[in-house]
Image 1 (cartoon, one colour):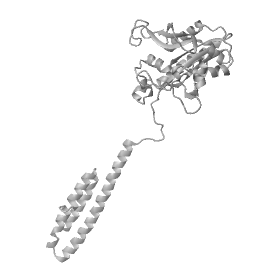
Image 2 (cartoon, one colour; image 1 turned 30 degrees about the horizontal axis):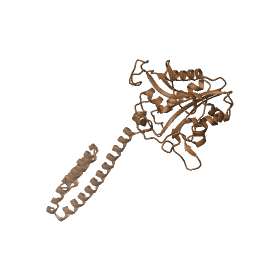
Image 3 (cartoon, one colour; image 1 turned 120 degrees about the vertical axis):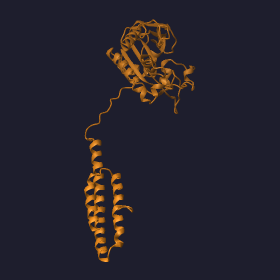
Length: 339
């Protein structure tokens, strides 16, 4: 029996290094040291031995059990270390190497705004950021919008606490400040965010962007206005664009005009963008009203000028064929990744 025990020890110790998984090791351990394992079955024969043999074999059996138990534990640690080493090898990353990141892109509103600013900077215009909070005087009175005008109604304008403060409804609120602060000739572009108390839908929002231009000098006429708008649109769309003017009323200009431009996508043949007309309605413009020039501290008998402005959101929608203004405020990266 002592020989069987020694043979079992040798067999187990030789086999252990070939086991590669913890599950296989547990299964093999149970087959040797478990309740029905080989060592347990051998020890059942101890009762048939003489007292002297039982003492000798029993001691040897306990020593072998301890040796095998220690060997199984050592192999368990070996297998765990091998698994860890394999994972470290396969999943290793050098944390000192900078992560490769996908470069982002500018929001389409920002892209078009920068293009517009670049066009007018090259034409000699100064850029002014419009105020988002302004006064009732600058927003309305200074640009010839009378007390009775519906734009002053709370249903159209966000009024703030205090004495006559409002969220700017138009970038025109900067005209008076610029005329009083800058010597003539004045050539200014005024982009900025404006606010109106409107319901939000595909073509309206209570927060949007406008861009305004004013030119004030001696002998400024409609021809200068037409040339400036045509140059800007042709530069933005990268092709020659024609404009047409229709009479329109705006309190701060006289005469006032509605400006349309020839569709750059179909060259006037008619398409979805221009709704088959060949023309795209775009903005209001005109020669600055004498009251506005006078309110700006200048003599309308000496100076004249023109002003025009449009919703930047609308230009971006036209340029990229975006059907819904609400996309601009959406955090959906699927929309932003297109630009």
